[in-house]
Length: 130
Image (cartoon, rainbow, N blue to C red; front, side):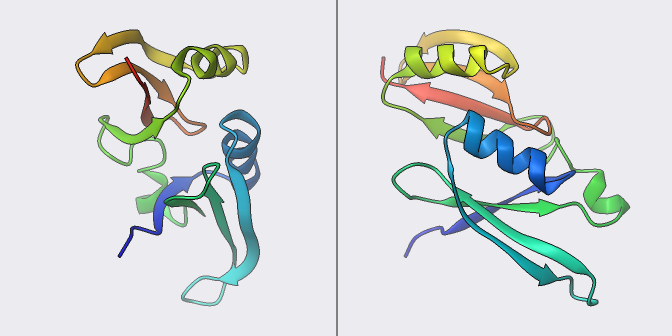
């Protein structure tokens, strides 16, 4: 058993795809036409980190309730955790790409960590070895 996908509600597909693929280095594994439950067009968009693992379903907000959670899916908490082998190189690359960090790097008992915002404002931990 494994966790295959986690949904990230986004404002628009293409800026989200660009952020996760061009900035974070994820792979776009699917971008297919689909339909909402009431028959309106949408897209089924999945990105995965290099090497596989749990993917993200990038779901465009549909309606006021979903629009309200864009960028705040976990009520202001860090809700996503990106573990990397080379923390310093990844941190520098993300800063150079314009990623907004809301907490600077620090070393904790579990390793290096810094908090950044994704394309819609969700908080992520960038994690690496101590």
